[in-house]
Length: 353
Ligand SMILES: Cc1ncc(COP(=O)(O)O)c(C=O)c1O
Image (tube, rainbow, N blue to C red):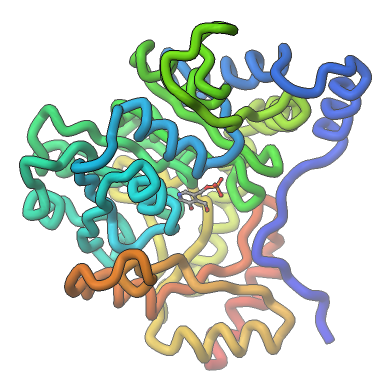
């Protein structure tokens, strides 16, 4: 039996171990200097005035919506094909997630479908740069009235750029994830980036029980903090962002060279930079491909979820783009440390189908 190939492999090592050791030695494990240092580094690479570290990408999405005061009676437009957290947080704010279809060739939200879904209750659009592919931002901006905020779900898009602007700096607020399948990981973690001081302050309150300052609690909040211990892991990771992305771009090129003639391979629009959170192809016999890869000890996975097929979001109508992506998408093993020999093995299984 060949050596198993994992779906993802976080690129963490000696620097991260040393960073954690340093924090343990200080005895200050939660909100300390590493949080501030990590937040400054996140804001620096994204290019926003503020970045607030939180406990996950899901927490970042939840708090971005609460900071925008989205609640009962409001509608938030969400792509029908995304990780469920993008819609779940809308429902958990008491608002309604209004699904719209995606373009199955890019996996991203279809701006014309967004325009058709806008009502007088629309309070935001969740713009998901799915798998790291930047959304067509100019088209999305023209699809909604100017007073409807665009919130980036940039969970997989740290390092990606839309026409030169980093994803995370496009929307009124953006949400990052540092889950181990993301380019930069803290084990679990997330951040909200924004240029708006009031939104940043609201996120900081909500992540820390609602405290504005100790004793001053304008509204209730959560404990969604990201501790010093985990922020310390993220600092050396962020310092290597360009190197990590270049490595992922190299692996993506190896796959594309071998696969583009017989499956739909992912790419960014001209002038954009893909963030390569995952390498997700599309093919008709996806389930057969999954089974064949698994039989060859290669871990692969479906892309993500068609939300209208999940209990909380049924029935909202037909979403043929999301259905097509859900049925055909296949995430291949993908990491900064993926070797060309591993890519060769994966491609050989797909070629032999
Ligand atoms: C598009 C998208 N949004 C949100 C999330 C949630 O991030 P987290 O797992 O850090 O909560 C993910 C995670 O996979 C994601 O892919």
